[in-house]
Length: 102
Image (cartoon, rainbow, N blue to C red; front, side, top):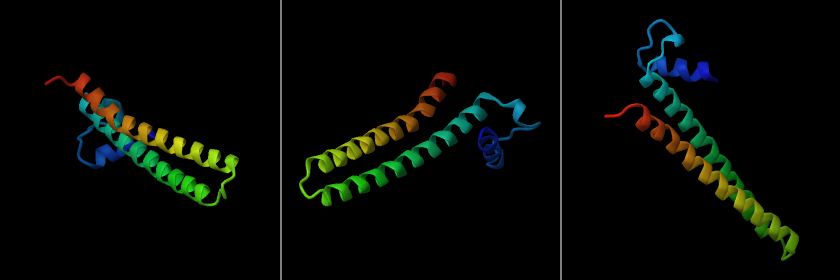
């Protein structure tokens, strides 16, 4: 997966001459930004699917407490996935602010 992000950064004109072994700090930050974007999109997609599953479980619970609690757990997992998605989107920005001081 590292090679994919690195090659993707190269194809976007980051300017890695001589291969992946000569990465500068800005190249690493670009790779981290790409990884964070991918993680954000994956977690957000999982969260939307979990919310839809929880809604379906609520609709089909028929008032049974074990089915309602199962739907509640699914909804909690969806909220955790959204929190992780927001965290994964902020980590590369935090790292870049610590590495490159302006």
